[in-house]
Length: 444
Image (tube, rainbow, N blue to C red; front, side, top):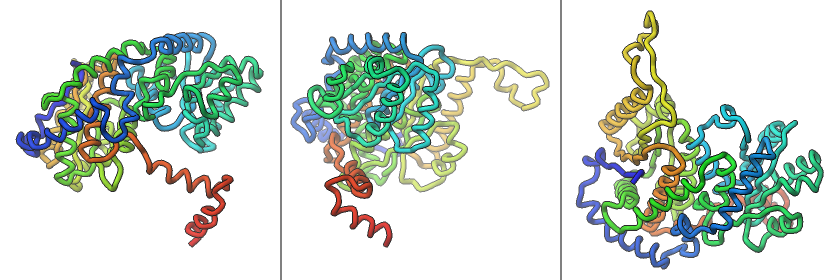
């Protein structure tokens, strides 16, 4: 199996009998997931998604991606939260942070995830003189950030090519049968893809939500799904040796010991957006009822020159999880430099991946000696297959971890609070009573 959890650096922080003690709770969580009897069971479509996905829609996604790659210079993906994080994370993990700059062909930009006027103006600038298509992703069609961006981009497209041609360049990923966006898409004749009713946004990357942008990036989505399917089989066994469950148990044991912050770390900048996806997955799933680990992230060795001081010597309220990527997408051989003016010839005549690994190993030893518990999630490489496996690993660990906390991992009631305040302050009809109250608080 391509994804493993290695806890060899946890021995002085967790005793073997602590895993024995918590395992009956894991067995209960496993039973609740498999029988679909636990909290949030209406949103367990992700469990079998890698094998039970809609094959006809999958083929349509591949066909749409081929068309977009053939007739467009730019694809604008409008979505927020799970409607963009997963797709961007996979694309950058597999293709690299600079895939738009270093590869010929289609450029993919994500928008609709902010209300910043600067951001939308930058997106508008990127389309000038370019043939572009839009993939708007929203179950309802009324999510403020996404709907506002789509309003701007649709007009931009219609002004550029006319309404008839624009309708051939808009792809809607939305509810199967209802909602504002679905109605509009049907009326305009836009191709539509489904946001499943039983899959929450942060678990949606392997649905059309993520698969269409990922396929447009030229990534093999069949390999992505196969990696997830193999991980599903591997992590379906209720055992202490189940690596996803081992990770979930570790997180919860450390949480009960007062470790309230987890830092996910990789020595690979292309993992940056995967870190962001992890933060949404665990933060939105576990942060309820004044409980839960605070998910944070770092990219090393970059952040060792900033966050490194705190992690080494700061408050012992956190633990680290390292994503150990065994092989880089591309290596670089370090030649010797005549004169050795920088004093680095001791690094010459070897691959840079060796230097990066020694930096990781040195950091692990330093932080561990400094009192930081840490575990390793080992993955062979960041190709489509392995990233698919990694996604499912995190899904399964997150679900079990949430149940161990006695929270519903599949709802997000707190997310609605800011929206209600924002609507009231903006004067949305129906929120008049709250508007005066909130303004008084702001001005008090």
